Length: 212
Image (cartoon, rainbow, N blue to C red):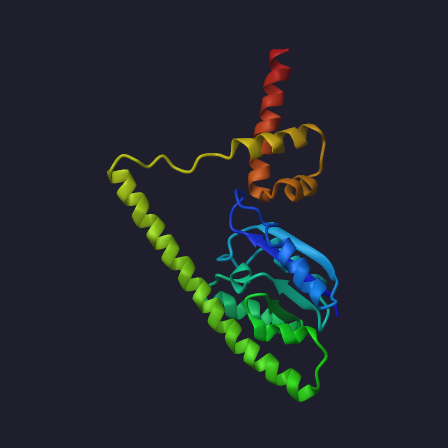
């Protein structure tokens, strides 16, 4: 059994590695070793997430997919959650979440009856928490939209400011010739944001060459 940790943040401004300490501590307390960590900055409301799918592709039957909370795995609609669960079940991967104590037993040896009982209870609770995570996502998006409408009406809305310090760090790493994977791991940025900054970086270099 391999334990594979999945760490996700919704946007490039958030630190996807924030939960690493909690996951490492959980594994260490149970004598488990995390074989690999899969980190990405993508919305949990999207089904197709490159690192999550890479994790599943790497899994063998009986492996553990370890997450801090169920909402790190899914804020999906009901049809998309059903599809993802189907893929996970087909690979016979166990989902273990720190906020779902019934799932912790899936990391321990058990007889067939006990294992099936825990798996059944865990599956039901997973579906409940996934539904709650989706509702929370929809409610937050609605409140944000309402707040923006009010702020615009009051002339107060200015949009989300860029993270200048992080963007400058990304540009510096690009100039140093670091790989995209190294940059994403170091800054927690998404591939989309990195591609945008890289394009701007190349355009700046072309302008300098043209002026020379």
